[in-house]
Image (cartoon, rainbow, N blue to C red; front, side, top):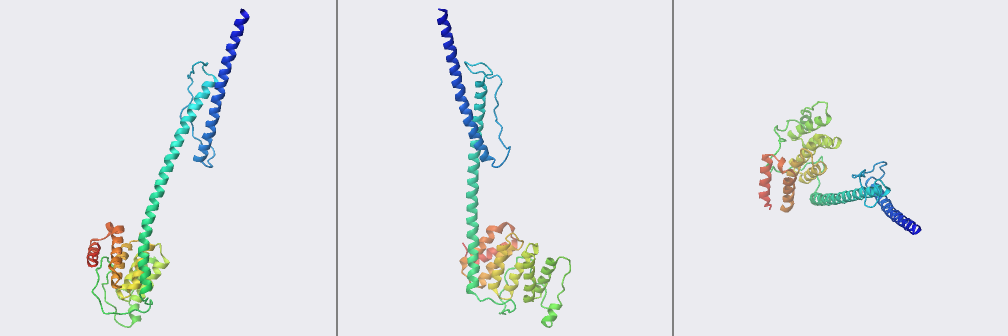
Length: 312
């Protein structure tokens, strides 16, 4: 009888030990699998970032007791590790999915902005190309003089205030004082402006073009390129004026005279007898991009021009 009882006790003990070992092996397998997955996720989140790992948000509790097992056993520690790893894995997976979603949104928004900008730029490029192909180009030194036309609106301060100087051409040019402030871009623009005021357009164009070419990052580059277009426009060369205005807007859209160049580009197109649709397109670009920056006088000029062209 004692032998049977001993045998029964041994069988029970070995059965419990086998069950515990089986549970231990199962949890260990889960831990190993989760740790491998976690390392893969961390390599994806921190590529090449040595030592940059995410610490578990849940740590094993010292007083966790699993039913049927002794407190502080290997099964308790493994269960706590599994719980922490599963929680960490779910959190990282959610963060990755949210990041990918935001990235897709940014890419779609940028693609839409690029398509819109490219379409506007291409429309103006087509207009400038048609001007260069269909209208005669007047060399910089040869100005075609036509009967004076009705003066256009003057929305900026660059308005001639002094008549042409009397005397020969050389004497007229010599009478224009050259500034010497120490800033070559500022001096070049001011000298070109004075030549333009004196209606010495070829000489003014040379000075203004030099400033725009040599000092493209200077704030006066936008002024010089815009006034270059006006010098062509005042000399009755609207095709060259249109090209100068368009280049100022395209190459320096944030320049202080970019809105003025779009405004005068529309006037150049009118002088070239371009279709109203092309002129209205330029006015639309001007109001869309710079509407809040236009002076009251320029705003009135745009409204008048749109009315004359019957823009919708």
